[in-house]
Image 1 (cartoon, each protein chain N blue to C red):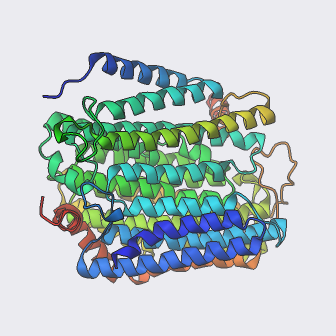
Image 2: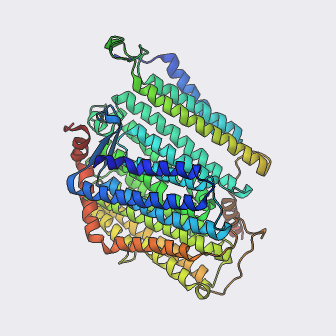
Length: 508
Length: 125
C-alpha cells in the first residue's frame, strides 16, 4: 500500500521524460499527460480513503528508517489537497492542450510545455507528500523551476519583465528557505518533520521563535501574504492563460500547505496567534481594495487571489481544530475556484482581445455561455450561499466567533472582505457583460498594454472550465462529508501524535 | 560544546550582505551575481552547521567519534546543483532580455505606473 505513495511523484517525472523523448509526436505528449494525471488523481483518491480510514500512510524511501532516511507521508490533509490539486491540473491540461490545438493546429508538438507541466505536477505532489524539511525545499525548487520555464515561454518584450520579477523573488525566497533549513538543522540535528516536532520543544524559546518566523517569511513570500505579496499581481497576469490558472490554483496553496504543516507540527501554540491575525487582516483588505483599483481583468483576479489567502491565514491564526479544518476546506475550495476564474478570464480575453475592462462590454448577448461560466465561480469566490465558498467560509467564521473577542473581530473583517470581493466581481460583470457591445481589439493595437490577441475557443476548452465548475459545486454538494473529513484533519493537525507515531513508530 | 569558527561566521555574513545588495540592483547581470554569491553563502552555512570537520563517515574504516556529519554535506551538494541550474537559467534569461529589449534591466510595472498616473490626475483640481 505504502508504495503507492511514491507514484504521484514518480509517474509525472516518468511522464515528463516520455514527453521529452517523444517530443516529435504531439498526440503522444497529450496522451501521456492526461493518462499520468488521471492515474495520479486515482491514486490520490485511494490515498485519501486509506489515510482517512486507518491513519497516515508512511513510505520510507530506500528502506532507511525515518529520522535518517527520507519519509513520504500522506495524512488526511495532504491526501485531500493532492486529490484536489491533481483534478485541477488535469482540467487545466485539457484546456491548455485544446488551446494549443486551436491556435497552432493538431500536429504541433512542444518541447517545453508538456515536460515542464508534468515536472511541476511532480513537484506539487512531492511538496504535499514529503515528510522532511529539506525534501520540501527540493520539491519547491522542482515546482518553481518548472514554473519559471512555463511563465517565460514565448516571451515578448512586454512579458519578460513580469517573468523576471517572479524568478528573482522566488529565487531569493528559496535561498532564504535553504538558510532556514540550515539553521533548523544546526539547532536540532534533524530535518525530519516528526523528529523535529519532538526536538523543537527542547530548543530555547527565543531561537524557536526565530526559526518559526524565518519559515513564516519564506512561505509568506511564496504564498503571497501581505506585505510580501507585491510580486504576485505583477507576474501572474502576464503568464499565458492556462499557465496563469495553474499558478493561481496551485502554487500559493502549496506554500500555504507548507506553512500550515510546519507551524502546526513544529511550532504548536495554545490559543490564537496575534501576529497571524494581523497578517490575515492586512492580506484580506489589501487584496480586496487592490482589486477594486484594477482595470486589467487578470490583475484584478490576482489581487482577489491575494485577498483570499488571508481567509486561510485567519484559519491558521485562530489555531484550534475547527479553524484549521476551515482553513483546509478553504484551501481546497480556493484551488478550484481561482483556477476556474483564470480559465474563464482566458476565454473572455480570447474573445475581446484585451484585458482592459473599460474596453470590453456587451458580451452577454454574444456569449451567454461565458456569462454563466463567469457568474458561478464569481459567486463561489464571494461566498454566496449555497456555493462552496459559503460552506468553507462558514466553518472559519464559526471558529473565529467562538475563539474570543479579537478573532471574532477579524471574522468581521472576513465578512467585509467577502463583500468587497463581491463588489469587485459585480463590477467586472457589469463592465464585461452588460452595456454596449464593443469590437474586439486587434493584436497590434498600440494602446493595448498587454498582448492577448483574439482567437477562437474550442468546445473542449469550455468543457474543461465547466468541469472545474462542477468540481467546485461538488464541494458544496458534499459539504457534509467533506467538512467532517477536514474536521478530522484539523484534530490531527492539532494533536500531532498520529503523524509522529506513524513516521517514527513511537510517540516522540 | 560545539563552537563556531568566527572567521567562517563573518564570511557567511559578508556573503549574505553582498548577495542581498546585488539582488536589489536593476541590472539582471548583477542580480545573477547576487544569486551566486548568496547561494555560496547559504551553502557555506549548510557546511558549517554540520559541526567541525572530521574523517569520512564509513563504519569500520574510522572510529565513530571522528566522523564528520555527512547529512549537511549531502544537503549542500543538492543545493549546489539546484543553484547551478538556476544560475544558468538566469543567464539565459538575461540574454533573452538583451536580445528582445536591448538591455537586461528589470523594468517598471507598466500597469502599476498607469494606475499611479491615473491617481495623480485624479488628485489635480
